[in-house]
Length: 285
Image (cartoon, rainbow, N blue to C red; front, side, top):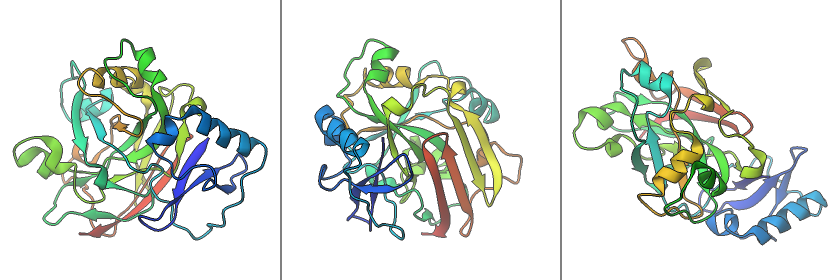
């Protein structure tokens, strides 16, 4: 299923995009698209059955904003340098273990909302990523297969980054990762049953119409199941938690000088195969 949330900021309502591309209202079956829903197989089954039977009302939202497809996110765990080609373009060594950092849930915006260039920024960068949404509580998992079994769904994430803040200002990466609007998510949360192999998805990103990133999750150093297993050794993952699994080559930081970092007025478009497409205009904060 393709689950999403539409409406103004803070007042999004749950919806489903059916196989014909028609938006269907889920308000009668679910108060929201969130961890509680993903952790309830019977609720998901009711939605699936109602959709198959054509019982869900059409939602007239032609001009409505598409919000993040997931509400009440608990935490966003991010994996750095998780593609062989991205590590190579930045001159970094292949990590022996996954590099873990966090983004605050309040960085999440809708897939087509504006992204704000932070005040004082000179190195705002783009990163298309596969986001994993946890569907079952995960702690101390034993295998990558078990990791995949705890995934509730997948989405497109844009891990916007400010490289000077991240690398040149001391401390951890978090300063360059948690600026306002730095995690557009969506448009849909696609349930795990519709993504049989998360290691066979193409990822693309364009800036002002020019293709900058074109990769595949097959190039991940640590595949999705192993990432979930690994992270569960250090923290408990709950339904509705998100893992951003890294970006392929083609970021601004990996380009020759002068590096084409983002500025106000730029337009970024990105997509992950089968998970939808995003479009953001950059504005000054």
